[in-house]
Image (cartoon, rainbow, N blue to C red; front, side, top):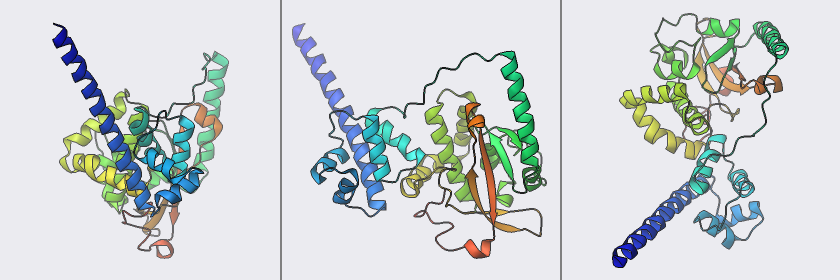
Length: 306
């Protein structure tokens, strides 16, 4: 019996060691891939971190006694990581996503609820006064508010049971058959949306709406392959999710023939009041495509095309 106990303990230690090695290898591949994309040596990154090259070499190999959030955020800054990549960094290094900003949420009074309703009503009036397509979403990209310019952009979209642009932005871009007629470089839009889906799931893994989108992605072979293979590789090089690199320009075709094919930046403009309600405001900045359509702007997996 003692022999069996010793053997089981040894097997447990071996399994733990192998798991640790696998985690270190994933982290090393991730960091080296990002560093290579930026054309940086280990010495260059070490200089950005104000540590020795030997110390950074240990970081990249995952040989760190204790990762702290501050250390990981400094590393992410040195390697110019997007929000999505930061989440992957935390998962590979410490096995969890970055911790949310935990604040006590007092129960709303009836008066506070009335104030929120009044604020959202006024905000809707303000959105409708804007000439650019603007919309407000929650964490699963459900459309909570949208202005007239947004509705005009999608006015010729045919009915669909689950993927209307008035309901969920990700579902429309991923599943609606009319999406390529508006999102002209549709594959690039899809990669960015798949990255956003993955990033949102890291933060809200139990959310049924997000899980439902992922299930539907898996039911489409091309989307499943893109989600499991193309998108992670694209993120490693491009370093972006859908919102947080506003230098990215994609193509959008407006149904108004006077506008036609446009460049498009997706810009986040979220006020504190919206953020406190768990909402985010996005604007589709339409740009003259002749001025901005360069080989670096579109279709390159080596550029920030998110």
